[in-house]
Length: 539
Image (cartoon, rainbow, N blue to C red; front, side, top):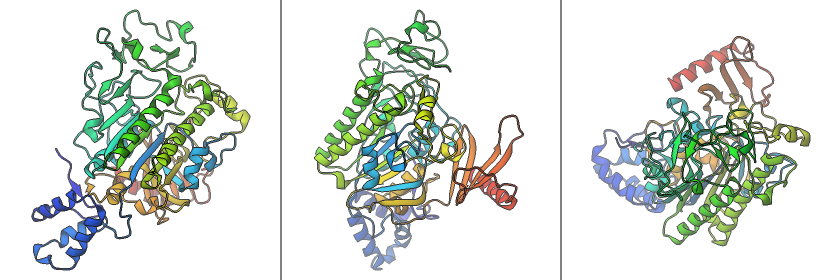
């Protein structure tokens, strides 16, 4: 069923206004915000009031603000994987050097209260792409590499929003939202896929770098497969005569793990899941950053030669495990592989920025850098991350409590930077912003109508540094368990600690950003009010 589109203004809709649809079509086709605003001024004049366009005008009120930029920027979203808020120089890191990410903060807005919607990858990416809280989808949890696509092709998505606005749309890097129907023959076209969600072109990994299939997928087809040696993937049982990390540990020549990750061996590293066939197509971990970087730059060059603005979703794989940097980045930090791949990711950001400058489009391009969830040090593979970070005094979560998988603030509170040179004034913002609000906010920026039945709200003014008012309320999750932020209050319902009975915890982030003191007993009315409100939102 096709999506129903409504206004970016709260409580406004085009339902029951069928007589206005011809005017909606005109506005939809008029891609220029300048033209749309001129038409709105004409409507305001009252000359067309007899046609009943006042309702339509109201519905467009937010999407056609006269103070919005009159040109549509290219939009690049760079999403790191498991990067903590303390992992970059602009957020206080001293051991790690991230000059390119830092330059985004110098030339843009560094948000101190930026959030992913979840403390793990698949759910937060689902929220970013759809504008819907992941708790609403029963399969929005960490997915295996052969999982079906959990976003319906009929569902409103961020790439479709841009495509409908006349953008060329591209995706590069980590995906991890499933593909096809769960019974995919990897040797054929993979549908439904990213093209069915609004991406013109894509070059991705299906899930993560620790899961099978360990091949790249370009425009719905696996890259480099041998026709006479089909690729097969299974998450339940191994294929005959295929070595695994458990049966042949001597083949784990590059990295071992002490928790899982002992299924198929690829590039001397054990993975989650089994696969067989077309071994020449398997990726080489050390080359992954270069491979994704080359494709991202290719897409940008292609787009700039065209006559459309472009949207690029760039899902970095760092610093997710296994952390295997290219040799030129090995030992570039005292933090071991985790620190080295963060420097590698910073290089990727720098290559993109350099190209935008060379193509003279950096002032035409809005760039967001953020992470899918908070940091994690030890995540199955043995790479001495805990030992080396402790020794060097590096704190990936900064002053925050928790990290990846955690319901505490550090699980979802992430680096969040926006640069739009020449349009957005550089600075620091304390507005509460979240990736889930890209959908509604970019709908307004591009003059689009908002899809119905989403949790995304318009926080464009906060994103552009025009307001310190972001989100008042934000539902967060980790492992299907909820956290709830309301203003500066942070609630964790039924929080279990060790063998103790579950209890609801409450923190006042205005005085306790590290969440050291549970004040639920001191503020029972606040707890009751927030529990009631949380239930109203998610039920």
